[in-house]
Figure 1 (tube, rainbow, N blue to C red):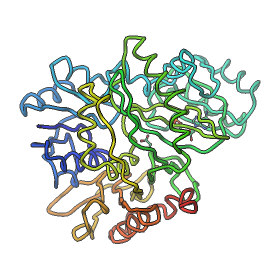
Figure 2 (figure 1 turned 180 degrees about the horizontal axis):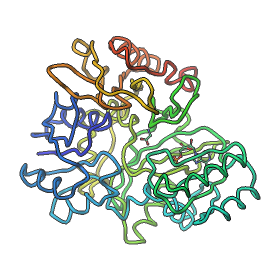
Figure 3 (figure 1 turned 135 degrees about the vertical axis):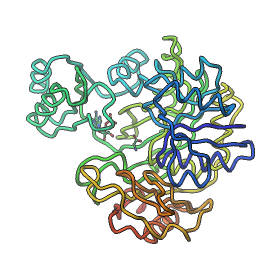
Length: 421
Ligand code: AMP
Ligand code: GLY
């Protein structure tokens, strides 16, 4: 098969790495890709948000399956354009991608199907939103309604903070004209990844990430500084509960609305007292969660993704190994605020690259034979092992072998789960 992956981050490198291992993959094209991906696939310098450019690329290369990595092309309707032109696509339609693109949409789906989630209210003006927060008290959560690259959420510890967040949203920074205010949920967060083909659902793994930039979960939020899989809190009982009460009802509601969801559902959960509630849905793999999931699934990931795109999930099972994976993100100093691009990364050449050790590239370019940093999150040093401590040891051994003075990583990825391992 000729396979096209859209995107160019660590998530897409991990997807490409898994797909490449599957003998069914003949040609692998990644658009736009990055320096790490270029070592295992053809990279095409097109804009993955442009329907015309993506269609042309798929047509010219007789692509058999398109795997959409990030949310932006999905929200922009690129998957619809490809399907309309007859291509097989892994990733939801623009209408179904609203599960990530609109907080209000997701809350309405939850209300319609009875999925447990935080109580909520939506406002289109700052005044009533502020009054509501004053009446509810803190802690309370303020969210820009649309896609805000993870930056539109404030978990406010005081009413004053919540008021500021509301004012900021209505100042237009996120291009939003509405705000969702949610009840604060206490508990332990975990993520659950479920392939859905419009009628059937197949869980493919659990993970926990580390959103704050600094050790001890301090500092500003980021896209994710590290992750591990499985998440101990997501035991079989909780997984079954989440499938029964949250995922299956939500997918049935999507189908009932005439917008069935096909792709990977990233289920963000808050777990307390043995009960899980939905925090949010994303309509794509997490980054860096995908790195640990792909490391664990290996080549079968492509068969599962292919079956999902073709609506054959009911015939599929996952071959689970009793393993663990952990990934450590190396980011440019200053991230998630201002950071420099272009610093040189050394020490990548002689690192092991196998089913236990992989450095996935997130934001790199190659120039004159040198690998340069080209983003905030730049590399994801990923280890797999029979135990979490083994995966942890491998991931940090990789991270420590990389010579990049302009970069940094958190030293405590896995802190919550390691003592239980
Ligand atoms: P979201 O973009 O909706 O995932 O929110 C980003 C982060 O904010 C989540 O991963 C949680 O840590 C936190 N969060 C969002 N909603 C809530 C809530 N209702 N209660 C507690 N924490 C929340
Ligand atoms: N790591 C969180 C995300 O991909 O949204």
